Length: 281
Image 1 (cartoon, rainbow, N blue to C red):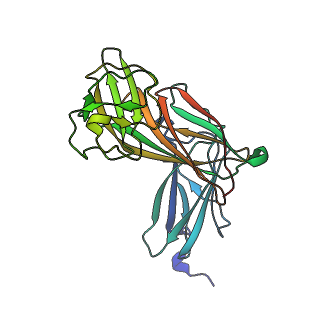
Image 2 (cartoon, rainbow, N blue to C red):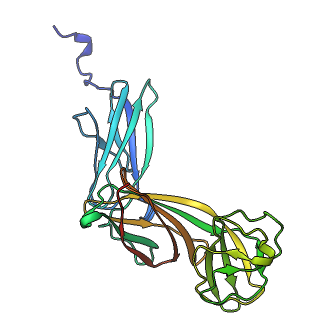
């Protein structure tokens, strides 16, 4: 039997927002992803509701831990845990990483390459990390003597003993020639650097005059990726404070030796690392 007092009152339903996911593309205007996305939570059959703000909303979920999946042909797949508990909704911004097929803008600063195993097999899922270094605002030292292309030792003035740790990265900023070059000090310092100079991991590429200031470089960002089904990877560095950046890269896969590479890349250009082969441990 219906209640006469309820006649004429429309039936209403109340839903509670349990989780809201917003995928973000750091390379597109306003962070709005391009192309189509599939956003799901493990064990939840009903698809989310996408609102105008770009949020994918999951209502009325039981408390628990869910696995979020985001799939797209233009971005790397996302898989992460989402914990739903109590009445307070979970709101997550999820930064998307572009896949190799992403239509990067022409001014993007990119690192590309291919990671393979012996016998030219693709190193699927190999972990790729890029630590981006940029120089301090104040110079650390200056060249005590000119440096020629191919030199493997630098004489640096204005340093106190132990002021530069082994393995440090320095930017040589030759304003007269409009030239920027990064160098990395060797992992072992000489007993008397003032006399013997500082050994470098790689030769100097360009000549620099005496008095050229040297700026200590520090990590400002770390970007990660994974090799796709063909072993390919791409990393977008974003904006740089200078036209050139130093990038310390590492490549890893369980059961294989790690590879480390130091890269100097120019803003607005693509740097290709070519083919890198991981060897068995």
